[in-house]
Image 1 (cartoon, helix red, strand yellow):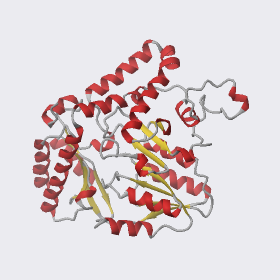
Image 2 (cartoon, one colour):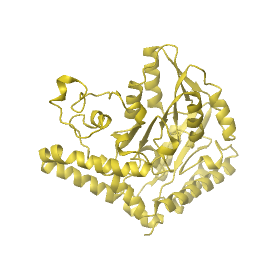
Image 3 (cartoon, one colour):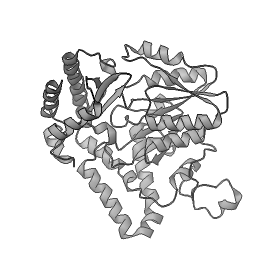
Image 4 (cartoon, one colour):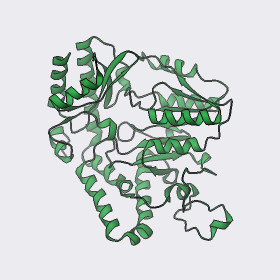
Length: 391
């Protein structure tokens, strides 16, 4: 099938008046996948009891099977959650950290997860250590040396993003997971931006815990993410919410609990009361959509545009690149002179109809650009022209 941006743009519901360069924040769902989502919702409303009691868990099984094949793991090692923040919260809930223990992270992590770790550390008395990584990153060796210099014999877990949200960098996670194993440290990987963006083979990577968002680069409807837990850690794991799927090991609940899976892990996390699960069912449709439109080729084209665009802007400003080219996928954060980042963002949107996030930290200002299959060369050229004028 065709996969140029001109043929792909009508498949998305984005406002045609806006040039959308912010796919990384919430994604964008193509029409065929969204129509499947609405069809599941309509079926639920047409026959709520039959659907919730007889169909839901078969559909979840179908969806988890497709997901497991896509990310290369066992279908009973993944459960659906609304977003990676929920997934990380459930992992934190099961860490059993105590005073004197340490969790090692970086200064590049997503704010909501940082807040949860900070709260939990303050409550339990362990240390949540941020490795202060230097930007720009010059090479992998520099990054790894800075990161591991902050590990100690008290480090019990590493929590780190595979692709950072704020800086848009693909971090050397395979090397970090491998080294953590040698040191007896468990790994919790935030792969919010990974599925549908770069290849993911969980069995090969072999983390202890992994979460990824499917509403971002895989283009599912909003609120679809997964939590992977290695089998070694599933025995006795407890969800934050205990509901009807919980309690098979408790004698008073055994007789009254109707289980939907032979896996305790699946039961305790999957069956948590009434909720609209329709978005979870669309994972097979989202995977098929990207197959139908040769998304591997789309991704490669978008990655080239990202690198070319960054080269153009950094030549214009003379400011350094935050990382090497091979640390980029379809997203990049680029330093750019702005007196007021919020005003700059509003000017782009209000005056030029360009949606793009801006940010400021450590005395520097920047914007992050995401390029997806619906973005054309004309879109990119338009942004370049606007930035030349605004500088």
